[in-house]
Length: 133
Image (cartoon, rainbow, N blue to C red; front, side):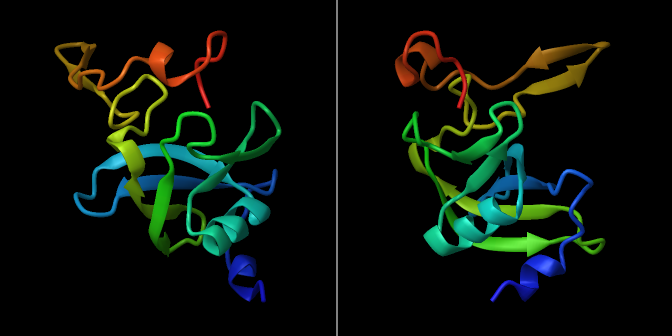
């Protein structure tokens, strides 16, 4: 049954922005895109599965890094065009740079300042020649 998928206002490319948040703290971990298939699979498998626009294929978060996002809750906004995923971030790292969150820079005094430390180096997470999931 996919009636719930029909309620989403997909963009012209059949995508919807998806914001992953830590299910305990509410911290925004990352933003990615989902299509019907990735969203349906996320629900079926109980883990975050996105659509990689750059690779043109499904992206099972953590498939290379091991940093899987276990799905706890899924929400749809009032306009039905943004999804939030409340997830348990396995390993505590969501960003391909090895940080907890992709949002690790803060605007301060006219510049972007890095405020979150690297937990684990990208080189130790990914194989050489690959820097991003």
